[in-house]
Length: 383
Image (tube, rainbow, N blue to C red; front, side, top):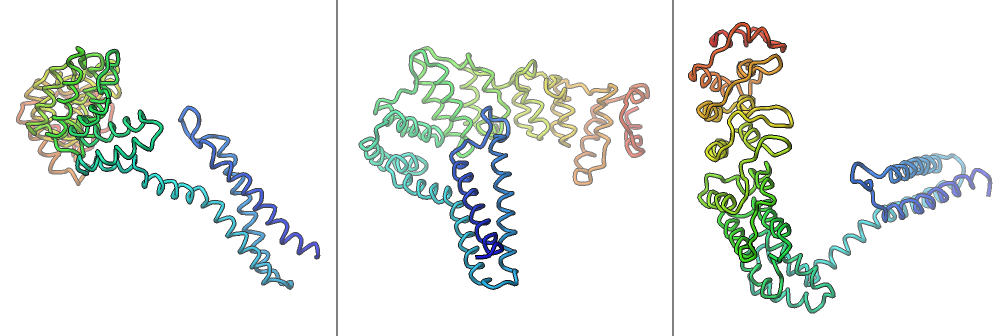
């Protein structure tokens, strides 16, 4: 065989061998960095190597296909086989995962936890009994079932698991008990408010004999995320009862808006969530509080969110506009550059004008940002 033929066949074969030797071990590595910040740099180096070798293989294949010398058909067949091997090597981890997923879905443990979503208690009990008979790790099975029951607010399943010996409140483990309550709240968007309320009530009842309260992690219950899950339907009577119940047990649903504490008032004001704003103000939130992360006030957030109703609520509660060198809420309110919110912006300006908000030429002169002619015309009404 000539040197040309050897180069054509041996080179890609060597490349594909190296490709497989590097790619397969890579599947067993942890791609993210150890600290979780970004990808593993070593994995990136290996991926770069694979890309280079893949390009080399592609070039050698093109050379074999378009070479004018004899044996082109054999070269095409040979390289086609190599590309099939490449495809199998790349797909192997996915194939393995697919088979593993299929096997897992046939397991009683999977059936038991999956049935929690919409299965009857009788079905869940049957699957659980099968899974418990087959597993060597009953504790892991119970934890998996408990997590599913909390996520789907299944009090009947929680009571069943308690009869099997699962403890949802243990002496000396108050933080774990609080974590379970937060787990219900964070997953509650998929459930009706009444179901969430009943589940939290049951868990609080489990902790009551041990003297547990939510005070140790009170600030966790004013997380902004909860206003988009458990507290989202804040005008629902069940949600209000839930929040009152949490407060009665030591939770803080309002937030402090200072230091590193969450400041839900500023965020919900910007989203125009008037019911949430009304609740927070009624429960002691400071209308002039400032978010510690970006120095935004609830009123400036509502103005930027083009919510006239929220702006009025905050003004009625005593919120004050800012008029310093870098932040001027009236200038922001008079910004009509976004056509999509033109009518909403004009409604905000009317609310401010009706509230007898005034400014001075000196205050506008202090502002270091730009003011266009349209804004100046709007601001003239407040002088």
